[in-house]
Length: 192
Length: 417
Image (cartoon, rainbow over all chains, first blue to last red; front, side, top):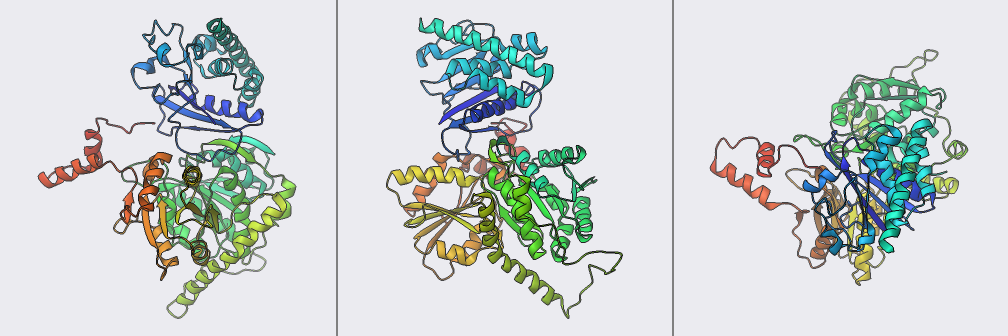
């Protein structure tokens, strides 16, 4: 079972992101479960959502406490909550920022985790570029697909089309694709 | 067709496939997505010959449901928590009148203190209201149970409450096989009422009955619920024949045959319990779980039979009967009357507290070694409790408990996550 925890703020599509990830995995014939950490969500408040992916029925209903991957949609959360709590030493981190981990003072992450699995992507910029609003959830999924190799970009596109239609869907697909390519290049550079 | 969708959406689709004629509801979290979904389907003309009635409150929702069901319409509503409490007078009337309304309760705690999260307090508060109460373990089962519920309700002429964990199920995306209209039509015949308000053949429904016959009417309500003990497994079997999967029934055993320790629970927590039991079995521990699907009627014989080999029982429930302890546990004790078995009550998951495998491992192992107290509150934070107890002992005007505790915790609003 592969467990993903998504951190963000109310209004950034955190829950929708987890749902789309589960749809993408489902479309690849896998079992998937997505759910939010329930609360009185408010715009700007910290929000967490989870997604589990497995090859058999998922019965577990506890929150994801030991994630295999973290998708962090808002870098300002790093100072507010321990987003890295429970992350597996082999875990993936996809962080939405236009700075580097070192610039954010997170250089020590490279000692705790595998550097080639730590990816940054300017998802907010990409969402403004393609859908003209702060919706980093979709490009983050594109970056996650590249970083983890767990789901294909094609499945992410199909999941986007289940949630959105028309121009919004096309814009989001373009954003996810660019994020995917950025993350793929970063991953390959780390391996080189 | 297999779909990856939200639990609420799956339930809305299952209800729509059941060809309801009247849907009346007042939105309340975590039920909202179900009735919103149905409202959209009615508006789009996807549900034929169905009227969606926006009402001004839950009391009105159940009152309209009573009226439409008495007029011969297949009727559906949904609620949760305070909404269920607000409609209670009409809830009792619906069952007393024998009207086969189907209602989803998206289980949520009851205030005060205000809490929008999941537990079973709402449904449990209505355990004696005369409705059949069935609990879903997964979103697939929640969808399936709604289709079964209409059949069960209409065959007995009794209302059925389908209970599903609020948020944990209603807001979870998972794989659900949504049946075809042909399958549902084959399983569920059109509603043929036992009693109907028909201008062509006028009757009145809702007579006043005095001491001369009130007990007899009440006895018949009980006898009718007892019939459901036969009907629920039968309907579950018919369902399996048409839809090809097992859903519903009275109880659901897992790893039970040789289990010395047996856990009893209801609803979605059964999944986490099963995973925990698999891990404990791998360590050679003799443990299993019995899920209760039908809480009303309470399947006394089925439970007694299933637990015949068990040495000890751990009833894990998301509800609390203040002043005595467990609600489910009290009924289980009755089912096991005269048998020599230890019975532990574990109150867990109140107001949305997460029930984790690690906590379950701990409490099940304590029970296994008979080190558990008769009534245990899972993961209770004694620091919080003792601080308030101290305050009340030392200060007369100690103030409101909830506010005191939040101040102790250093937060003015509940934390998320």
